[in-house]
Image (tube, each protein chain N blue to C red):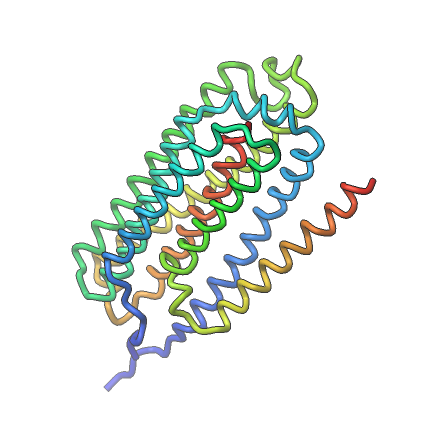
Length: 200
Length: 94
């Protein structure tokens, strides 16, 4: 009788959490930059922040929170052995991720259209603080968007694994870790949203 | 060997947390439209921290994990606090 390969589930999850902590510090660096420049240019940051679309920001926040709910529920579903439900919850997570990115595309396009991009004509007359605000905005939301894209690809692969039966009630740590990654993406946005979109 | 012993969080709990997150999002948007001066940023960060806590402890199951994972989160946050603190000792007193 062949024995299944030994898998260290606790170790896998510990590794994932350690990776997530490095991600917190990565985004933390960007938030420190934000804090320093907000302190130096409070009025200019407020003016630049008002140019961001509150609607886009709020809608994307609701989308990501819902997306996180689906990912969290997918873990419960796989634990309970509900394979179909797990699959569809993951599909839902990926669809909401795609909607988030489409919104981001329209949002960035509108900014580009007004010449607001690094070295763009829309920023030629802008005060230094506003230029810094938009630089940080593009870098932070760009890096975050990249994480959304990576997370969506990861969850698509996991959904495929659930469908094929490679990920199931007895072995779901990959789904768990991917969901953790997805929640981190949500977590970063929870801070990006008020800091960039809601500053008066 | 199969993966067992994982704490199963009921769907209901997740839905409640999600509703709480939606309410807090509404609250942070509403509060941000009122001019409170420097307090605006602190209120925004306070609400964001509560939301982050809900996501980390419930959505990410940290509440049900071994103490070592919680300890690591604590270390990451302390490192971040030192990072921010030391930066501002420079920025504030330059």
